[in-house]
Image (cartoon, rainbow, N blue to C red; front, side, top):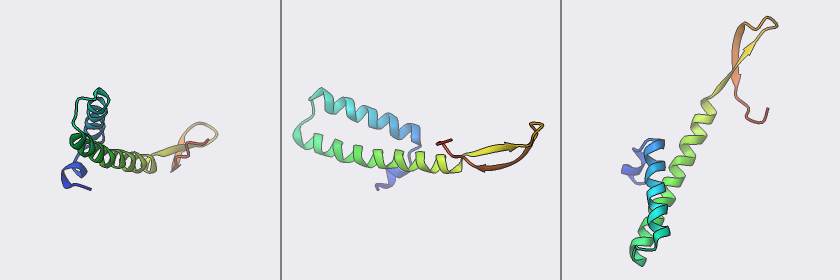
Amino acid sequence: MDETISQLSFEEALKRLEAIVHQLESGDASLEDSINLYTEGQKLKALCAWKLADATARIEAITTDASGAAVGTTAFDAGR
């Protein structure tokens, strides 16, 4: 992945990806520019997916006892 792309935050990468989608949808870019934009978009999509998966893996659920007091944490399971 390009070093400049890998330095972006999730929000910055998503904003740039949205701008690329709008450019491609407008049809104003030349074929060569469209190919370059598409390639950049693929890299941004991969970065966003990786950052989202990383964030999801770090989320923890707080476990409580019968009285509702926090007693620890467990890995978050979105399927629950």
